Length: 100
Image (cartoon, rainbow, N blue to C red; front, side):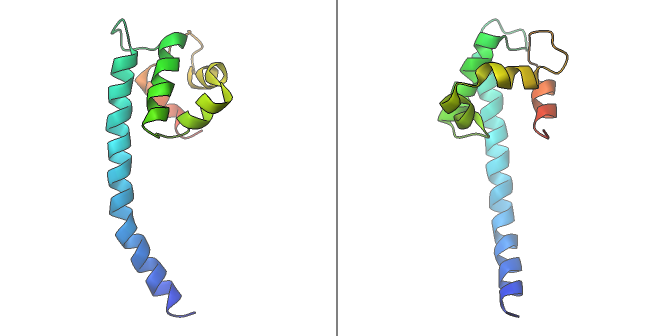
């Protein structure tokens, strides 16, 4: 049992940089997906653009996008992210929703 604690800690310290790199790569891919989904280039996503964004993220295996796509929960996800209920999703709203 004594050996498992240092070994586990060692494994976590090795894995942590890899997790950080994956998170950074996911953020970059999600930003690119946002830009590509934003058809009118206004920096915000409509419901139809949001669907494209989710589909692109699902293809890249980012976050919970695959689950949203699998269950067809685009509208529910959109409503949860659209904090000010203006019918548009901004990068700021997406970032804020990550903690939910």
